[in-house]
Length: 261
Image 1 (cartoon, rainbow, N blue to C red):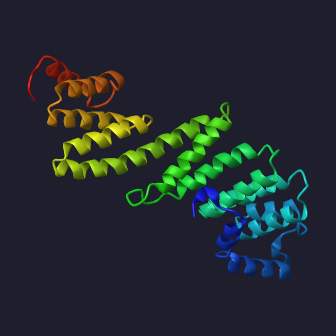
Image 2: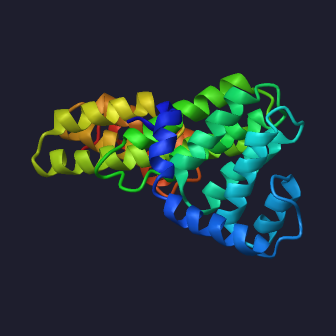
Image 3: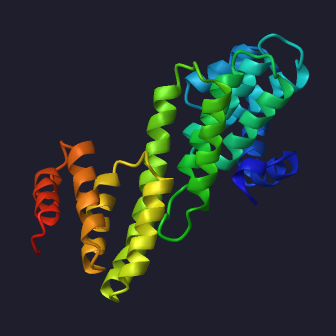
């Protein structure tokens, strides 16, 4: 199931993993009040648990508040705090669903924008093994691009830009591993094709200078001196602070002058 399409049924399935612990919490709370001075069903009770680091108790209390007070002006805030606890617990699929519920049930809340951003972080933090699968990173990217379109003046835009750049770097590293194999096999046209796609599709990656460097080398291997000079020249001109910039400028000049490697 794609993380961007979780629904309430999926939420119920995921929450099942925590139900045993939550049940124990609720039994204990019913027996002794859990040391919480605030009445059951109140936001203060949930905040008290959260402040004491009793995260599962806080989740149950926030859930109770939202369920019994769906029209309260603080219901969306309670839903948001519940979702953020799941983020703290690193239960990212659950957190993503809770943020989705907030946006669906409380569309006019001032927490909607931040919920959309945090949902993207939840998808991003689920990405663990990029060498095996890039689908999670792609899902996170789609989400952040949606955020950027929906909130073009958001103070979160610098964070979104940084997240998108990080995702792009993940994808580029994955493709560069593929390039390494092609290079070892001497398949220089395949190397060039993959690198051209990266330059077209991942312009925001911090690894673009490396891609340009490798693309220039591939062009030389293919006997395309003009292309090699162009890629070296682009690296030197667009990324003058890169460690390869000076060497790239010299290579561009050499190739333009008709010199060999």
